[in-house]
Length: 105
Image (tube, rainbow, N blue to C red; front, side, top):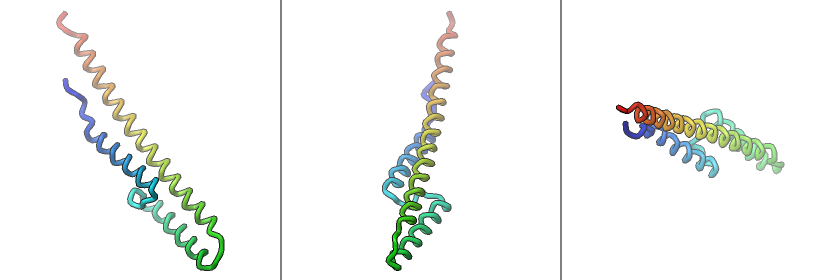
């Protein structure tokens, strides 16, 4: 028995890590549609208030909340993927140990 096949999970883990890095740089591509709507709405509201010469505190807080929520969602996804990968590796190791222990002697 060879190594467990974790290529698909490894690829997803790398993609999720890239998404987390992009969110920390406040890039839009890792956001889902609801999160994009919230970001665009906060930006529009903030820019309107800037044009009126008023405070943008509420819009800034809304943006900060969206970025924090996205970061938490992606971190949870990454943790779940890593746990699944570890489960597969552990399961394969148990099978290998059981196969070795049930030798011919």
